[in-house]
Image 1 (tube, rainbow, N blue to C red):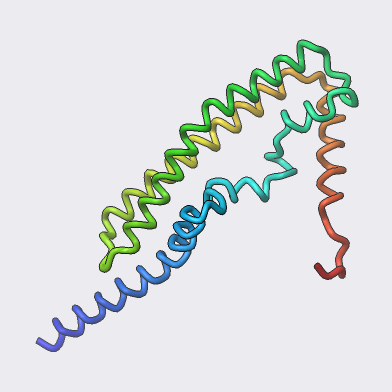
Image 2 (cartoon, one colour; image 1 turned 30 degrees about the horizontal axis):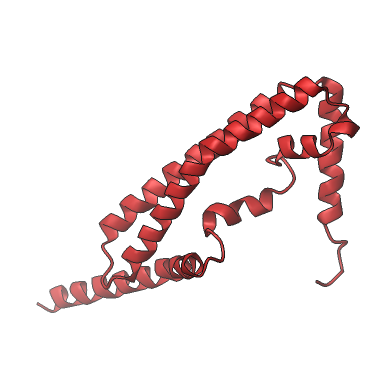
Length: 173
């Protein structure tokens, strides 16, 4: 009998600890959603990708069209790719915000339905995966428009912009 009681109590403690750990970031997400301070993880995630391997190359190229000596056709094609990408990702981003909100609501329940939480997390990850693929697709389509020289110039632009955002070591914020 004591073993059963210990098992039940241990399970309850584990469930409460798991819920506390998981719900902390999610409740912060829900608070940001309701206050209109951003769309949570889906939008913050892109912040660290401002430059580098997954930089918004198409936008950077369009911003520096004269430096890259882009033709009118190249500009039109890049704008078309960017618009197509935005049209494709907008509904997926909205679905992701909705699912993240549903996760936050599920985690507010006591006790949280962990099966439902897991299903929603898996759904959110599928949406993130779709967004990532759409981004790669747009980048690859965009890269195909540049000449070799323009690709090199674009790499230099991205590299110099990235270095401009880095602080020299030893400087405080």
